[in-house]
Structures are given as C-alpha cells and as structure tokens.
Length: 397
Image (cartoon, rainbow, N blue to C red; front, side, top):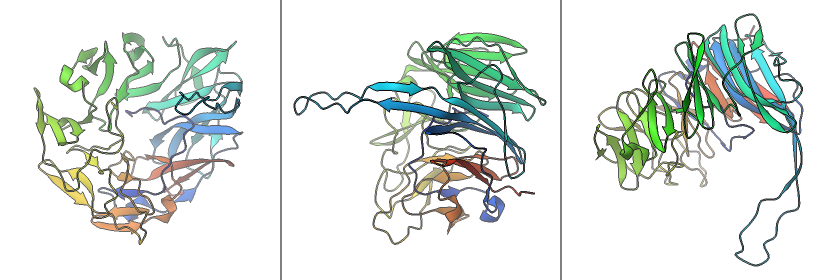
C-alpha cells in the first residue's frame, strides 16, 4: 500500500464524516467494536494501520510516554518573540504492535530486538504473509533505527541501511521502500539499494500516481530504477497528482492542470476557493483523487457550496445535507478509505453519500482514521484517555 504512516500521536480534530463513492450504505455494513489490548498512558497513540485481508489487520503505535514541560515563557514586552516552553523531563515510549484476525479482540506482539523502549512508526505489506515494520528505539539517548518483517509465522528483526529514524514505508509490487531524512532505501530481490533525498519519499492519494522525493531541491519521481527529475515548474507548486490526468495545482485564480510543458487553467467550479491546507510547501496534500481526477472542498462557510469531483471533462457537485445549525461548515479535507469511498470532515453533520442521497451515519462520529479491508469493509480506530479502541464494519464471529 502506498502512503505515509499516520501522524504520530495526533488526535483528529474532525467532528464529523461524510462518505461518497461507488459503495452503498448496505455495502459498508454495521459498525462493531473490537477494542485493542490494554495500553499505558499518559501518552499513547497509533502510528499506522495496515489491512492485510477481509478480516485481518496490523496496528502499530506507542504507549507509556511522558513529556513534562517547564513554566510558560512570558515575553518581556508586547510583541517580543515567543519561545516554546522548555522540556524538563521525558519518558521514552514503549512500542505497540497488535494484530487482528477477524475475532472480537487483538493479539499483542513484543517487537524482536526493540527491548523495553521504542516506537513503531509504519507498517506496510506486499502480501498477507509479508508484512514490514519500521521504527526506532534508543541507546544512551541516541536514536537507533529498527525494522522487522513478518513472514507468515513470526516477526523477525531485519538488517537495513537505515541510520536514523524511519519515517515511512512504501510498497510497489514486491519492492519495499524505507525512508529516512536524507535517504530512501529500496529492497529488491533480496538486496538493498540507497538513494539520496532531501526529504523522505512520499506517495500521493492515487495509488498509481507514483513514488516521489525531493533531491537537490527538485521534485523527482521513481522510474523503476531511480528517481528522475521533474520540470522545475512542478517543483515550484504544491501538487495534487492523479493517474489519468497528471499534475494539478490550486491557485487563487482557479485550478490548473499540467499539460506536459506548462500549467493550463481549468474551469472553476462554483464557490471556488483554494482548498483548505493547500499552500506553498504542501507537497503531499490530503485531498483525495481517483482515476478521473481530484475531489476537493472549497474553504468556505457558504452553506450553498458543495464538494466537487473532476469527472474527466468537468466538475460534479455533491452538496451536503446540513443539519439546521448555523455553525455548520463545509469539509476542510478529503480522504479515502482505500476502496473507492471518499470521506470528508464536516462540522455538525455525519453523513454517507449513497448515490446522490446523504444518509446520516452516527456510528462514524468517533472515527479518527481508517483503512479499507479487502472486500469493501472498513477498520477504524480512536485514541482516548482510556486506551485505543477500534471498530469495524466486517462481520464478527
């Protein structure tokens, strides 16, 4: 699966969800709870969630961390530069690695070679019986990279060229890419090859759009044997990339699409504005794309605006069915669950788009992040003060 790991320890600020796509509400199914095993506080979180079968998945994360900050800094005079509160004490996290195989609970694993302290930052699979993990532990205050592989029977620590913190995993066929700041490492036919990169390699929303990294300040794309440079005009723009229609960017004047040599303007949908969070320096946007083109929501409080999708020749509009609340706003971000369903975050309304009709889905109110299970069901989780809980729409025994 092509993606960044989930943000470490960040609780989603989403207050509601909307889903759109080919699957119907009946296809999604009813939500059922499958709580994870006990995790320690005060700081805990999920870093990645990888589905490997219709009722099988892995979750990684951390637990038992503690950060104590010093007194809040008070500027000596109005307008003086602010400073962050100093960290005066920390307790390193302990790893979380659990597996779900279709029942009502999870099986916990002790990561081999990690010891008592560590964090697993990413999980990815080339097949159900070939699952990769990466993260780090500490030795005398220094970061020690860690990686392991599940081969169908057990998890074994594996040697990699990583020298620092692993920041993500990408998979293409049977090839595995591990990223760290400054380098990307490819595992192919049993051997590792390393490539320089200014920033960790990343993938965009469309699984077929490719693997990207910045090298020497220039955006590069993986060509099968290395990272090839892209035109400088692409490097200068925050991008959204689709398989069929290539590179997109959103400016104040409207959306633009790359024609191979230059940016060409595309008609603006109604109530157009630059999508929320789509700013300079945002290389891997959160806005979902499918084979035809982008889905996006304008950053506006206009209740007459819609969520828009490029159908190949024009924009289709999907208007939310807002509740009678003056505070309701349009989505501030879009994402997919990996099976063609598009989800959006909307203030005050939790709905699922079944064809052209919005249906409320209150069971999705506390979903923070999710993955599609093969077959169209969904696995999701939430981190709270009492632990990490999960729920799924897959049938349980």
